[in-house]
Length: 173
Image (tube, rainbow, N blue to C red; front, side):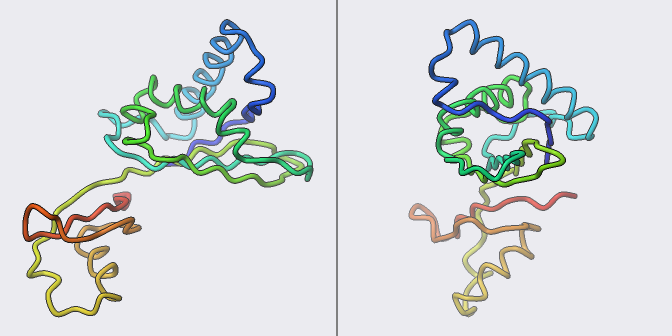
């Protein structure tokens, strides 16, 4: 799911110098914008928050000036991830749920914006007999078809059973 909002996050240089009250106001503004844009774009929160998700932020600035993506991860994007939790898109914003959010910086003179991509990450177990006899290079393709996945993130034999443990992104239905 993709939610596009007009505002851009503040860098850690600016966000880090704000007092608690200003950070709280900023977070409420961001949360309100994500909520209304999510409704407009029909990207409403799932009934139950994603247990595991992959977050990507695409930041499009008006100018071509060099930007450090990590400054935004440690700055205003904190308010963005907190808002996604409170709006019910993701269960929590800790490393076990979202891992390390990916941040890309680009330029768009006409339409500066932030695109938030939230992808549901699933864990499934697949029987070992399903994968026996296939070359290792064909296994991700086979798993994609079997699990109706758009991307296989990680797979390997589970150490406690004779099944394959697969981490994947579920295809939209």
